[in-house]
Image (cartoon, rainbow, N blue to C red; front, side, top):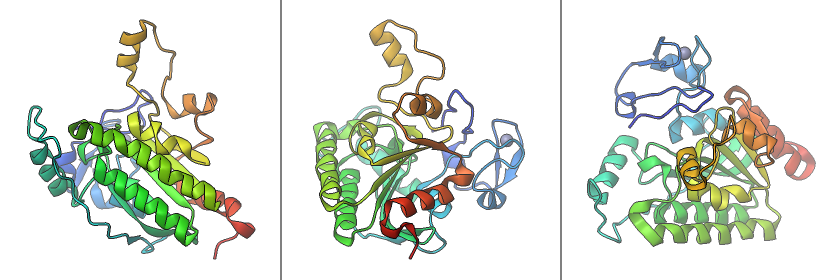
Length: 284
Ligand SMILES: [Zn+2]
């Protein structure tokens, strides 16, 4: 499944199935062939034109966290198929394929990490896994991570790459919105900061629930931020949408996010924000 570029053209299109196996990736923005190993050194930014390659959860963790600091929480759930859901293909088949492609149990990785020396509880979503959708496993893992953040008194950082709720789990999926929102209140009660990092895409039920309730909301440049897709909104309202709708810049101008940060600057900026939010404002 290819990743669509947003209307600012900052994310390049990649064939996800091929990403895992090919040594070279073609930047669809400028056509350059880039050596995969080289991309790791450049934070997955095209060395020729500056376009952003899509990041897996593992790559995002490597990009954001201090080297070697990520310690995964072993929650260990795997999705079942509560509805026996079949669309064009059985949900069970989609799950197995996504697990094989990503090496993940579901669409999120959670764990403890450090960012510029600051200890955090981190949850990072992976869009390759059924569009980064939130079913009960994602909801449970995010809620567990939040509980761990509250208990350990570490800031909670959520990196969103999600199209929304997982339709294949129906109402069970929608219930995760309430669960994660309820968990979020633990952070508020404990006075623990919550930072959301919105990337491409941050839409649907994932944005509408816990991601929109952060204390500080940072958007990566090029992120797509919204609820329903532009075409659905235009068809529903019968109105033309303004230029730049759902871009990070648009979200900033309309108060949805607090700042827009380039990928190059994201690690340092997150460290700076954590420093301001945590007591004393300095790293351990
Ligand atoms: Zn390029």
